[in-house]
Image (cartoon, rainbow, N blue to C red; front, side, top):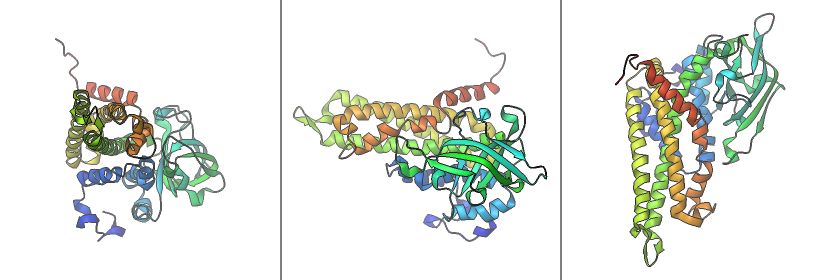
Length: 355
């Protein structure tokens, strides 16, 4: 526990040392139930995926002085990894950080794109290339402070399919001077930190997406109960009940998988999670976003014209069908998740296994 936050009481009277991943999962789900993805991400998506590397890989100063300000909402933080030329291919990033001759600073040059909350954040957990070799081995993590970055650091808002309140940004860094004390982890080994952090980010995305899917199910059941077609409730139509059955079965199966993984996370230390749960979490994210596609499609067919109307009784469905693809891209695309999950499972698969 952070010494500067000793004695802090969490909602519900939970002691900080008792707070586990199930508590966090519930918090993500309840926030997601607002049904407004852009606004929900504005509340703290950038914070959720950036505070973990600060706590796990940051210096004592970062953990004891900066992290409490972020946790208490006095400062905002985000994760700056993706670039125009490197999304899921993190190792292909081009942003550079070269040390000054005196070795006291890094000079950062490059761009970042699609950075959630970046428009209004104070701190940026930023992936940079400090080594001369291409690929994963020369990547490091720096904590960049907007206040200290100078005029060479600029964030520009990006308009996306959901609300601009999320603060999605394009970041330009031109000769930004960053103290070497702002290095997180070990120089040239930041890729490992990024990969470690991805598990939590993907798990968090799954929890949020599944909560939204459950909201859609609730909306569909209510609508089918009240909507009259051919003189009877929409629920009397076998084709509609089949759609609902398919939706419920898919959503609840994914949710049960989420709870199983959350249970395992509660019983593993952070390092063990990375080695044992990387593959399962990747496959769970893949499955969950595939279910989103099914749920969005069937919900639109159930609501008809109301599902493509931004206001009124179908607004929740309209919002979901317009934005659900965010989950299949952010934190790693579906294709990358599927491939990663199988590759991870093959590591422990018997080499001589055959029929």
